[in-house]
Amino acid sequence: MNVSKKKVAQGGRYYEYVIESIKDMISNGELKCGDKLPSERDLAEKFNVSRVPIREALKILEYMGILDSSQGDGTYVRNITTEDIIGKMSFAVNATAGAIADLLEVRINLETFAAYHAAHRRTNEDIQELQQIMLDLRQAKKETPLTEEGILRQRHLSYQFHRCMVKAAHNSILTSIYENLFELLDVSRQFTINSSGISYNSILAHEAILNQIIQRDGDSARESVAGHLADLRHKLEASLSQAKAEKMLQNSPTPVDTETE
Figure 1 (cartoon, rainbow, N blue to C red):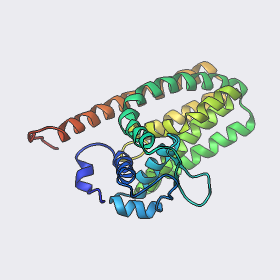
Figure 2: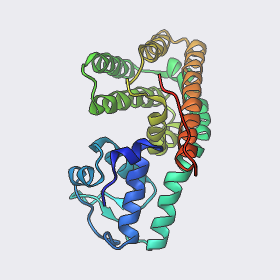
Figure 3: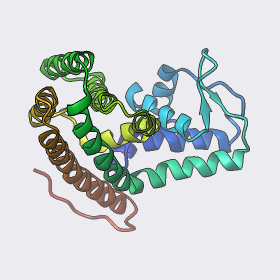
Figure 4: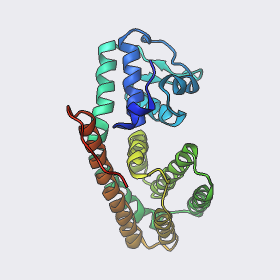
C-alpha cells in the first residue's frame, strides 16, 4: 500500500493518513497483534510521507493504547482484539480534531493557574531552565532553511517551555495532570504551528511570561498566558475550519472550482 502525496494534499493531515494506513494494514492481516512495526524510515517510504507525520501518528497510537514502544527494540501492536484496535484508530482520526478545542480550554485553565503560582514559587533553577529553553527556541527560529525537523524542534521547545512553567508552580498534582495530557497537547500544536514554525510574536509572548515570572508578578504572568493561549485558540479555530472545508471538498460528489492566490 502506498499513500500518494496528491491524495494526502486533497484533505486531512498527513498523520491521519498514516493512522488510517496502519489500520488498513491490521484489517487486511498485514500487521497482527504482537507484530513489530517497520522502522520509521520504512513506514515513511511505504506511505510516501516524511518521518515527521510517522512519528506523530505513532505517538498518538501509543497514547491510545494501540502500540507499545516500551520494549526498547521497536514498536509493537499491542495484544488487544483487532476490533478494539480498529475502533480506537477510528476514534484517533475522527475525534482528535473535534476534541482539540475542549483540550485547549482545559489547557488555558491549567496554564494560567500554573503561571500565577510559578511567579510566586519559582526557584533559581526553574528560571535558568526556562531561560535556556528560550535561548534554544530563538536559535531554532533563526535556522534556515526551515525543515520539517526544524518545525518539530520548535514545537518541542515550545512544549518544554510550558511544561517547565507548570513544573515551576511546584504543585505535584498539577504537574501530574499536565504530564498525562502531553500527547494530546502535542497533537494540538499541529493545528497552531504553521508551515513557518513558531512566529516571532509567539516567542515574544513566551519571553514576556518568563520576565513576569522572574519579577514574581503573578497577575501579569497569568494574564499574559491567557492572552497567548487566546491567540492560539483563534489559530486553532481557523485551522479546524480549514480542515473541515478541505474534507467537505474531498467528499464532494461534484467538482468544485476554487481560486488560489
